[in-house]
Structures are given as structure tokens and as C-alpha cells.
Length: 125
Image (cartoon, rainbow, N blue to C red; front, side):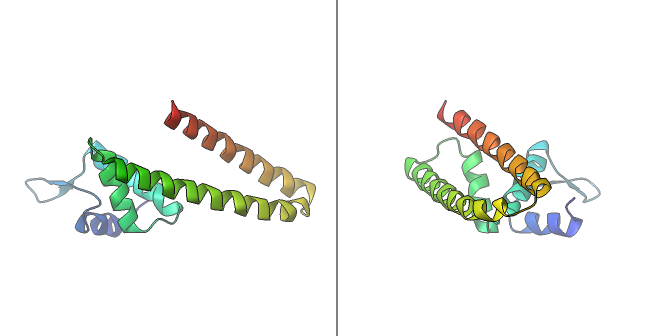
């Protein structure tokens, strides 16, 4: 759930766009709603708003420059390496948990691994 204040802020900084009704209410398109979902997903990954704005622009730009794609791939690759390192650091900690907690965390990691693999296959195919 996103507050009205947050949506107003995103609109004011150009992350979202809206039409105005005759009564001066904002009307958000399906694309804006999709953008809002994307913004919230990016926030869960701790991306700064300027980076999110850049990502939205890249999604909408039909003629993305190769240098932008290369930069983005490099950033994602670095993030994946860091996440992999973080996971390796967590393995000994998970091993020391009780069996119920181990199952919970292992299940979560398996789900994330599956999602990542699917995403990577979609990108490379």
C-alpha cells in the first residue's frame, strides 16, 4: 500500500505522470500504475530514487544506447556478486539454526534462486 503523499511526491519529482480531470483530480494510467509497482519493487532493493528514475526512463526508451545497457549490466553483475558473497557469509549462520529455521531459510533461498535463474534465462534468450 502506497500513501497518497508518497504518490504525490513521486509525481512531483517526475517518477510518475498523471492526467488531470475537469475537477483537477489526478488520473493515473495503467502505465503509471505499473511504474508505481516497479518503484516499490526497486525500493525493496534499496535503490535510490534517482536510480529508479533512470531505470524507468531506460524501460521506456526504445533506443537505449549501448553504453547505458553496458553500464546497467555491469551494475547488476556487481550486485549479483555481492549478493552471492552475502549468501556464502550466511551459510554458516544458517547451519547453526534449529531445523525448523533452517527449512524456512533454505526454502526462501531456493525460491529466490529459482526466480533469479528464470530472470536470467529470460534476459539471455
